[in-house]
Length: 226
Image 1 (cartoon, rainbow, N blue to C red):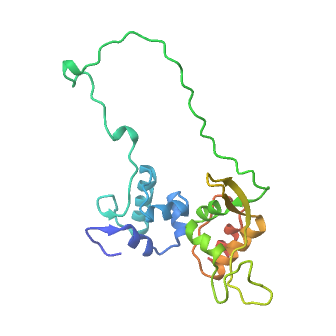
Image 2 (tube, rainbow, N blue to C red):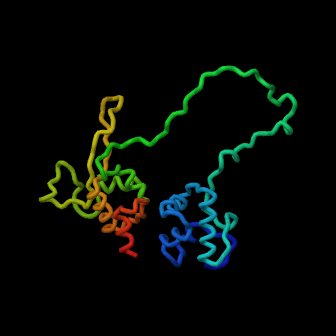
Image 3 (cartoon, one colour):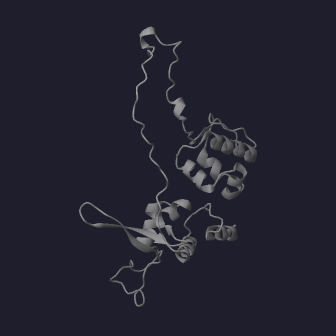
């Protein structure tokens, strides 16, 4: 890497002499985190600093936010607008002591994750794609349309007698009933279909990353290709 006044995150990632997987291990982050940062999502200050330090180690050049473009740092809530202290406030602006009043206590909402109630080992298709760094729109096309020569699969296509595009198999269930009475559906993958989806990505050279589930087939597939 030549010495320059400024660099971009993309050129630093593309010019690595090691794999992105190895780089992420050195930086202590997941490959999904690096993908999000390359797509211009903001990252935690500690994450951004770790990435810059790791780039500095690999290239032997000191990198910082001043000479690397494309990295965004999340703003801390208290930094968006500091409240003035009473010492800096004018006299009329200083709040007067109020008489305590009995007010009803409002319970905080419980924001626990929604239970999917899927069969054991199954996962929602959108969640499976996001965990592996594939856009959900792209994965939706892999299920709905497919890749390669042939017809698009469907109820009017006989897959035994007609050539059909290679596609990802999935299961479908009712999600909810809309106000107009129509039923909204959602897709999910069984364990066998998850493995088949990863094999589909490999066949068609679709880039994907390892998820955090160490027993997922993605860890075996990616290790075999390196």
